[in-house]
Length: 227
Image (tube, rainbow, N blue to C red; front, top):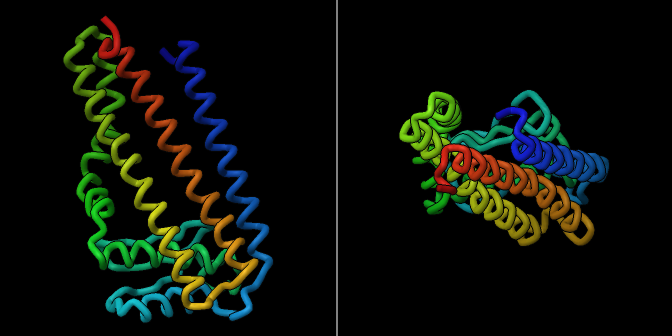
């Protein structure tokens, strides 16, 4: 199966999408990391200012090692910013910090897709770790029912990837709106924020497209899309 031309094409498409969006993100981040905002606020200060403006209490802001490791943890109500963003006064830091606060706002507001994604985490983990292997085992030994179970489990992981899209796009939209609304960024800075967040969003789109293509491939190999 690993030498199936169709599967190799899917792997190639996935690689090109992943590589292309990665280069896009790095380019946008690098470009606007050298441009400070006029307000001169650090990523941490921006995150705290937005939380205060929305009346959100109990969310901690912590530095975390690594590059582009920024994330919001809804279980611990912790907003973790990479050290470059936490201490930086750049346009890139402003966009990334505000995006992660966008997730905290979603959590506070009970955003439906975010709640759905949280509930799907166990299903996604099961599908990612076991779904594909069960599918392959079912195909190899010729048990269609086993392969079907594997495809369904893998489909749960793909569904999680798809639900992630509106969560990320909404967080970016909230970030852009609040940064401009509070005067944290203006004019050209707002354009820079959009470029950084749009590039980051493209990585999730690439992951979703690749996941769907792989799901369709394994469903086909399991005999679910053909007689």
